[in-house]
Length: 208
Image 1 (cartoon, rainbow, N blue to C red):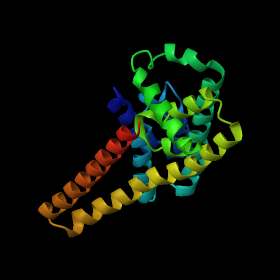
Image 2: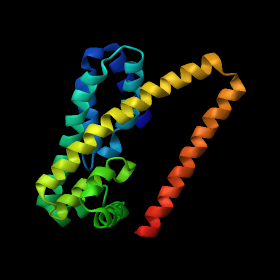
Image 3: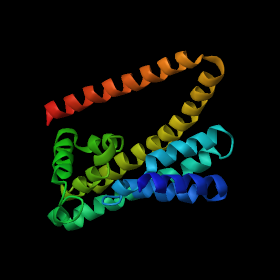
Image 4: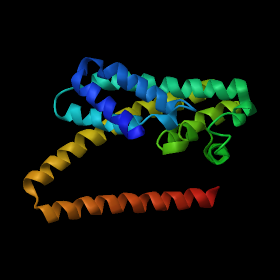
């Protein structure tokens, strides 16, 4: 289902590039919004938009202008939901089926405090849960917004950059590196990323 939705997004953006900005806002907003983030392949779509930017089809800063407020608004609404509904959210999907998501977010918030909102945006499945927990824990609004907007300002260019430079690297490998050499480089990058993730997961598990 998610793969089909991602394909629809790619085809629509490719065919209607003038709508790329609002679509990116919607995707960044949805991925940052608790309860919705698990249903939207926003990160993959952002990478694809980065590929289009690298190919000259879209303007980088125009897309960033849409992506940043989308991501920040999603986190802000998640924060308000947590602040006003508090423990009631534990009785709502997906937390009824995956209570460990809230437990992990609580642990991360207690360890890192304000920085958890900034760091959490880059942590995959639990990233939309951390603003929710920040609201439940009565984090001061101004501190939350500073971390929220700062992280959103970095998150959007980061994933767009992955698409831009990933496409450039793929083009270079295809043109200048032999087939086996390209495969070796790609395998090395994947292995390094996997090892880095495993190291981070162990550190997080040890600290929780």
